[in-house]
Length: 332
Ligand SMILES: [Zn+2]
Ligand SMILES: [Zn+2]
Image 1 (cartoon, protein in one colour):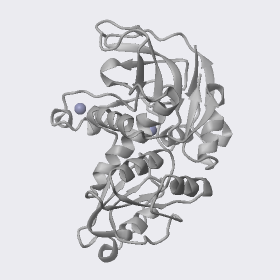
Image 2 (cartoon, helix red, strand yellow):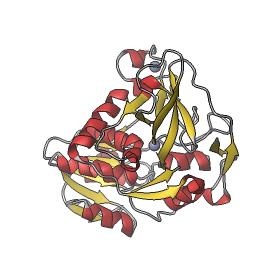
Image 3 (tube, helix red, strand yellow):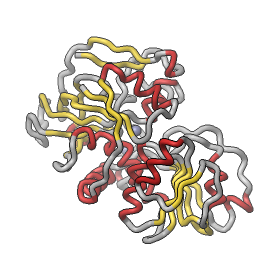
Image 4 (cartoon, protein in one colour):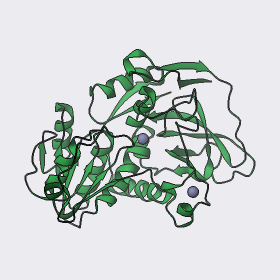
């Protein structure tokens, strides 16, 4: 089978990915082998290819928004039938025994394994997944539509809960790519007022089309104080900007796995009055299952751009240069 691997991490335009012929992987105990139909492109894949995220294993295959069908099962795997459609997401395995797993916070497990970072992911013809970490997908959602839900959607859902906006409250969204455009739909469906701050005309147009209450440039002041905000852009210099936009007692949740340096904060203007700054780290399987059910029920629609699997580097380069709005999906 063919698989993309991160060869030597570096700038995406320098070609850090290589496509290799690999033997078909055999599922081990509790694993299933998935024939990949499509795989979403997440900014994390770009951070990995460019070396912002240190490689956890040389020659790993990226991709953690995988939709495909069960092709083979390992010993003891019985959750899914052969041919059944499944989703493979970022959280690939946890130890189930650390103090965080035991209290239900497996997203901060002390020895997790992630798809497309530790475990080979979906930029390939096939991938393996521990069946306990795979998702059943809502039948009403196509393969292409399901892919971005698996990371962009799930992480956005967790970030929205972390931002802790009361019903009908005012949410700020900083950066408007794959995850933000799904999260905005969820927030609007829940009756929030949504203010979007982003660079790039593609992104601003998409935000307006989805019904955002206001759309401005990334560092614009908010038209009204925010009850909560999510920073999706990997730009640390927006942290003080977003904190200043918060109302008293409100929370800024940083959704990304990587953020550029945060400038010094001004305590009086940016943190005092019980403003909170927090990160969002991965997700629990419960977050994933809840979000997928909601997305199916609420009809959350990803705006997608299709690429053949052979063009994975071009998709990542287009993401890096902001050449599309919404989410890219690679197809086999
Ligand atoms: Zn754990
Ligand atoms: Zn991701």
